Amino acid sequence: MSPQSPHHRIGEAARLSGVSAANIRYYEKEGLLAAGVRGGNSYRFYSDAEVHRLRFVRLCRAMDMSLDEVRTLLALDVRGAGTDHAACATLDEHLQHVRTRLAELRTLERALLDLRSRCDGTGAQCHVIEALHARADAEPVPPPAAVGRRHV
Image (cartoon, rainbow, N blue to C red; front, side, top):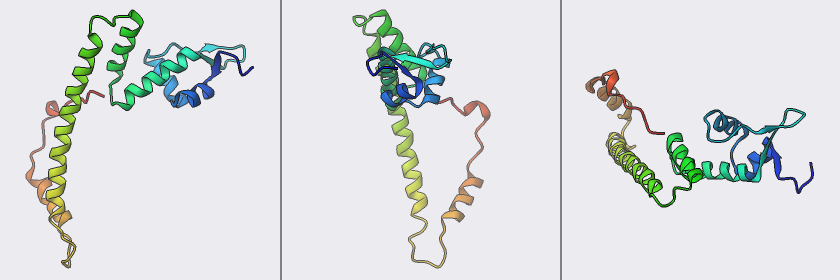
């Protein structure tokens, strides 16, 4: 294949986009990317536009967007709906997920700091494991319905 060819085999598309070949196949399966055109040798080929789309998906995923959020943004791009501000609404929703996760992480940080304070490294015994056992016995087991599905 000549260097000027607009089509790239999956390995080259992976290298150019920063998305692994396995993830390219997964994104095809999830409908974020059309299945690569097959050559006579059954290799998948991707255009420069598809490589760009993979970069777009990679960027969104790096910002912790769910596949549904990425799908929404891609659909807005295809429709050319830049004037209805739907992309802003999608980002606002994602920002709320991020803020919720940050609050969860702050709570986790406080719990870990409290646990870490159980051992100052000077005594003969570390009390971290002991504190974990006590906490495991003290905390109620959440009902199955209480376990929420993450947005990602």
